[in-house]
Image 1: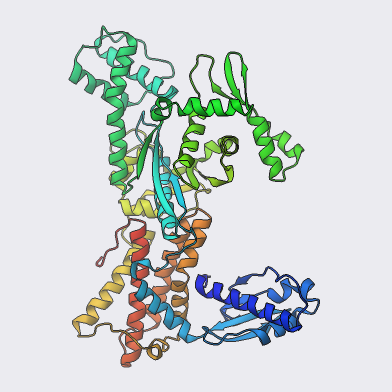
Image 2: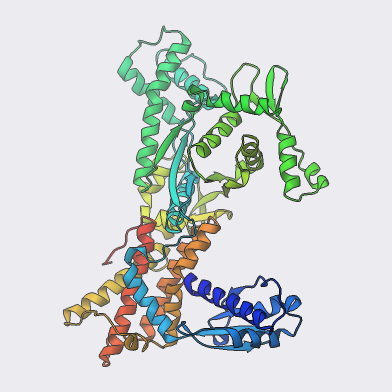
Length: 578
């Protein structure tokens, strides 16, 4: 069921509230607060296009039977010049409203008038919002989780922009800390093994072939220059050489995936600027740290307990969580990843972002609450940080789980996937399942060029409409502006349902932004394609009635435009021929 256009429901809400207030002023209803009520679409369209429970929601205030209150509200409502054609009272007191044909004509006019801005919303009120996603470890290639997170994060940012936010995309590069030390030790071992096979490899080192490749390239450039250097100098030279190459590879992979970040933020800048030390000092000044075993600890348990109590959680529930304190500065003087993470998120807020959204793997679940609590602790609001936890994705071919690349015979990386699967398919299919659900990515389906492939299905609808328009043009028939009377000729169920769906685009955008769920828009545009095919199969566009033909041609054009807006928004190709 599609959602009715936001402007229509907002206007109707104001008219209902005005009617209730008018009835109270006249004494027809008792004085009191206007009740909170719902405006929604009935499951059965024959019961109306829009329904409200205002009379039942206000039963206690109105002190009368909801059916009677509903009639009083209708006696006081002013629907003159509105797009409501009629209304009725149903059941225990629902009020059902029926939209006029002029409403459906106005939808098509609005799509034509607004162009690429159709569906824009002011829901976000221009707030500056950051979506941080992928943020893969720069010590190795990007994997399948990055493929899913990239598609979700990029399309979410596009939805937020459409919903009226100022959305920014950021990639956080962990170029400091333990993983870089491990990276350095692994590179050093592979470099030294070129000259001495007995050189020990660290037990927890990175075993990937990419480490060997980087060490070999370093040797090609520098030869044995660093063989006799001290270990620290050698490791620094190796990291300075290899890390930029890895980051460039990540940037190239993201560009191939049609993802372009507004900023690549380096963790190292937080340490160099003193930001990490600064948050530790801030927490210490607030009495939220203590020293133990030579390390500085953060009172995570106290902060999170306070946060949960404020949310209404009971103490016995909190006790079962077994909250623990966290180390911020190790006994060797090095800050932990968590300390840098607090500094990084504080830095985001310091830069003026009013809302933060992170797309993380589900294995970070335990990190969510403590980071929200830390934002409260450093002077911001943890509730302004939303973390979208993304479940695992599995590759499937011929019904079997695939773990190795056909091309390399090694674990599948993002670039392996994009070598095999069209980028449009990957971006679209990864956005067909909510982040919170596990996903099987069907490789066979992703490369199919038929209606079973969801992106092909949507692209084909757009191309089909373009073909209809071209074929009619070849016969000398081109679309023209229609009068309201001509557009009101669209009355077949398939026509009305399609226009209803097109009219709900802004509502779908708001819902997707509110829920941080871009898959709502992918499902919506798939429905648009389905409803168009139903319309086309039931209603001949080319017909003897010229006015009706023009109205249907206008509906085709409106559908084409909405599909294009969405595919463009998600950076997916929108072909005119297939």
